[in-house]
Every structure is written in C-alpha cells, then in structure tokens.
Image (cartoon, rainbow, N blue to C red):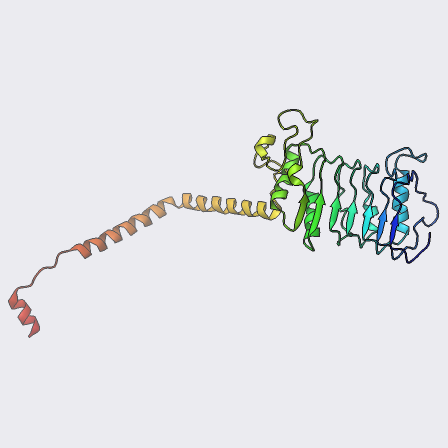
Length: 283
C-alpha cells in the first residue's frame, strides 16, 4: 500500500496475527495519514507462530519505519496488548488521540508520552492497571501544561493500598485534565477485606493503613518542600528562643517595669501651688 494521499486507514477486526518486520512496512510512505485503526486485530500477546510479542514488535517496527509524522489518531482497542513500548509513540510525534481500551495493559511506562506533546486523549479503559504512579501523573500534568487533556481509566482493577494514595490525591488536585468517570473507579473485587469494590475517589490514607507521611500520599515536591522548610524554620525559632530564654525574660520584665512607670506617672495627682508662689512665678 503506497498512497500518499490516504487520510484514514481502517484495518479493524482483520485478525492480523503477525506484523512482519521484513521490508519497509505495509503502511509505508503514508505521509498524509491522519487516522489509523487496528482495533480487534489480535495484536500483542496471543497465538502468533512467531512468538507471543512478535506481532507487537512488528507493529512497532512498521510504525517506526513508515514515517507517519502526520498521524493524529491511533486506535488499538480490543487487542491483547499487555505492554506499551515507548518506541511505539516515539514514532508518532503529531499524535493527539490514543485509544488503548480493552487490552491487558498493567502499567504505563516512564516517558511514554515524552515525544507526543500534542496528545490530548488517552484511553486506557478496561485494562489491568492496578496503580498509577506519581511518575505517570507527572506525565499527564506535563501534557496538561500545554493544553487540556482527557484521561480514561474506567474499569481498571485498582488495588487500594498506600501506593494508590498519590493517584487519589492527584485526582482531587489536578487542573486542566478531565478524568473520565473517576467517580466509578473502584478497588478491585479480588482485594480481600472491606475495601473490595469500594469507590476510590474519597478514600483517605488511614483507610488504606497508611500514615499521613507514608510514601505515595500524593504530596507534590513543591508542597512537600514548603512543609519541610516551614517545620525547619519553626524548630530554629523555638531553639533560639529556648537558648535565649533568660535574656527574653529579662527584656520582658524591663518592658513591664517601663510600662508600669508610665502608668504611675500618668496617674499621679496634680498638686496645687499656693497663690503666692503662682503670682511670684508669673511676675
């Protein structure tokens, strides 16, 4: 296929069990392509005769070599993707919407969105994500610093422990990001105890067995740094006051005595002079 004017390529439900790494790629030279759909094509873990991940590796190779610099939307829903190679997105610098719903993805790699600064829609619904790290939310925030974005993590089996607290805190604090259906996010049903099936949006650290200082409480570095500075300064002030407590006490006593003297001077009664003294003073 070599049509440089093609804008939209829909290969959905073709059961592509293997994407060959031989040659230049089956979508080579589609410089004008804006949308590519490979939904329901069996990509990722599966029955490929070349190995479980060979077809995904072939796809990464194909996208890398195909020079799809204009691609805006990539749809890979309903596949068997369990991993997300960073190279997959590095080859798509103009990508604005990424649809990965209904796969078996369990984590979001570091720097996954580093080379896709225009990304606005990230659909990771119906996957196997158990927690969202601060590194991942930082990636979202970096994208949101450029423009509004939409993140969909609906129906993932979140495991509610201290590692998830940072994500919960982030959902309350974040700006310029739409977190789709976040009120429906729940602790995985496979988690034993009272948290099973519970909505995560209003969970607080003590419900998860975490102290307020536990790792993953969601304090961002600037806020955490500010708290540390305030605490240190408070301790320094208290230490200085303790070491100089005698001088401070003496100074307070002097101030009290001075104030007392002024009060006594103000309240002292006036004494009338004899008439003869008054007239002699005037004359």
